[in-house]
Image 1 (tube, helix red, strand yellow):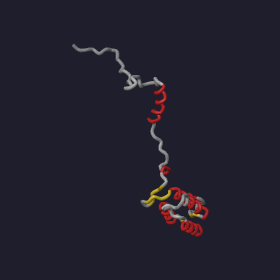
Image 2 (tube, helix red, strand yellow):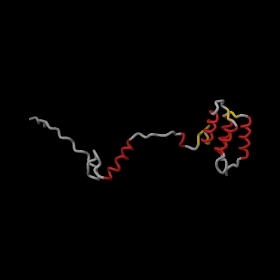
Image 3 (cartoon, one colour):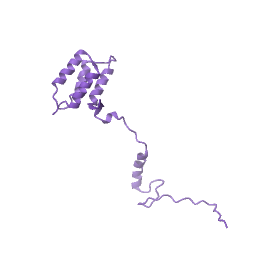
Image 4 (cartoon, helix red, strand yellow):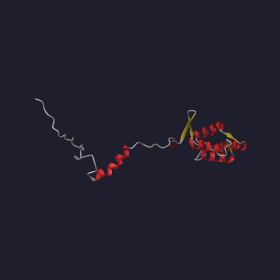
Length: 140
């Protein structure tokens, strides 16, 4: 004898929440679930990551930490008029980012030397940059 299948398909039971003992699918059945469901839906969305540059105070140059704000100020100064040279006014802006605390840290001094090495200055701007760094107090 062969068993015959019934023509009616019985749907599977809906999933039951293990602690609450209620149906999970569909609209929330309690105020708590109504409050939690939007947050859970937001967690299921893909993460939107912001720019990685903004997360760190430092930028690694030649294997050493350097002050990101000062390097960005130097890059902006070079973009300024399109000539690729840092002027005296730009030098003051860069120095303001380097000498921003109680003293100049080793990372900030290293940043100053990287800026001197990698960027072109006008003669008066370079002289001002070096003089101001010589007067800056090292942080203990």
